[in-house]
Image (cartoon, rainbow, N blue to C red; front, side, top):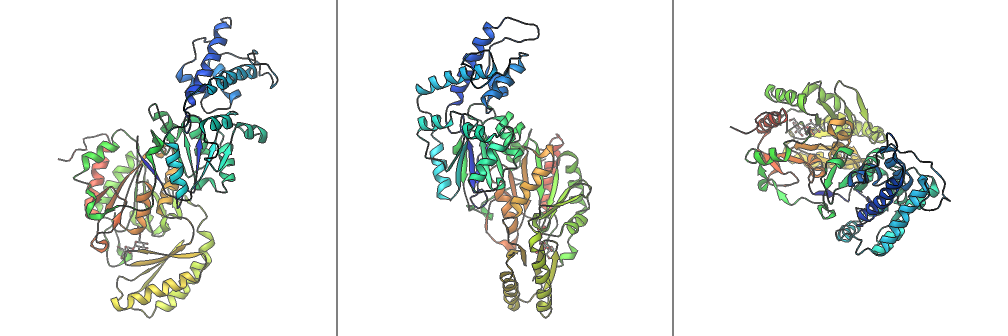
Length: 526
Ligand SMILES: O=P(O)(O)OC[C@H]1O[C@H](O[C@H]2O[C@H](CO)[C@@H](O)[C@H](O)[C@H]2O)[C@H](O)[C@@H](O)[C@@H]1O
């Protein structure tokens, strides 16, 4: 299991499940279920097709954990071939109906709650305080109708900004997990879109609900067992304690301090071996060496071969600042995913394109900026205006040093005068991009969600060279492997990367090792 980071600039809310995530009550629930089911099946006369073995931990995890009480009764009994009338809310505890058994379980639970010791896990308060310091809002969500009582016993009733519990869910007629309704209600009460919220869950049904609700990130927490079931359910990352979740905004290592990826290959291979891997790569300065003419950039045949080979074993995407069709054409491999304009649009293997729409409102301002800057910079020798669908780049690699300031201020002025645009910088290039919360990091997650089942729960590996790539390196800092391609232009700047290579050629050789690893062959370097 790994540590993971939340970035308050994009994760503006965190929605926690209660039992097993913030309170140590999963075991109390499990014991209450077991006592009720074991007594019931022991008394029930044997019948063909029915399985009367005692209720186990696996039964708790597979059929009951995270669900509404009535769904838990029904799903467990179904799994044993036992059918029971549903009954009604007025049934007495212990009546031989789903409602009656549910009520009995609830009585056992509330009786043991009264005598339980400390309920709040000790890693909860430090994380909630760190989130609050960074302005991240918090919610608790539970299918349990006892949620308020549990929080009160745990002394945590006032800790969170929003509470959505089983009582409210029933009043509103919200379906239980894996339907995401209860999580979406919490996001709405936080005044945030689901994409800006993180779900933290210990139950498979809850992880599935987070995914179905398209939350920004779904963190599984497996406090007492292996992470696999949560990974299978679609968790982006699985931690073993909330202390593994950090709230961070700045990198703390320089390019010179990051380990050479070739020398650290054994360590990288160890992190990736036996795991599913998704590879996302920047293009200019990463796959293709930087050259004087942006139109002349190309990948070596060797790099193309290695990418082709990789794409046979793992999903591979190229995520570029270039226009989508431009980068697709330059790489020229059909089986890859492509994202262009810094991830404002993408193409699946075969070419079907999609855009998430965030760039559209900026289109008219980009057209106007293209017209204005085209006219103004025509007189500046070497300045080159390069329009992509959702960005406008101005290259100044060939502008004499004394005039570069003029180019930068012209772009800055035009950008500032257009409400939908902002300025971004790259290698000898300044760009106007849609002024929305979007960058290569968000684009990387967007890609991963669309790359199909092979990318769900996989370890993301990303390589890039430029400032804009740092957003993607940051995004995967805690659950992936990030490689930066060093360059003299970038001196010794800070980076989120875990490893570095010296140039695109060296990256290609690293990717060749990755291909061997993905093919299951001997990936050790000779
Ligand atoms: O995200 P990327 O794939 O790295 O694209 C970033 C920009 O790359 C290109 O410009 C850079 O590469 C050129 C060719 O080597 C070089 O001449 C230029 O100075 C670099 O900035 C591309 O032309 C831009 O559109 C991309 O935004």
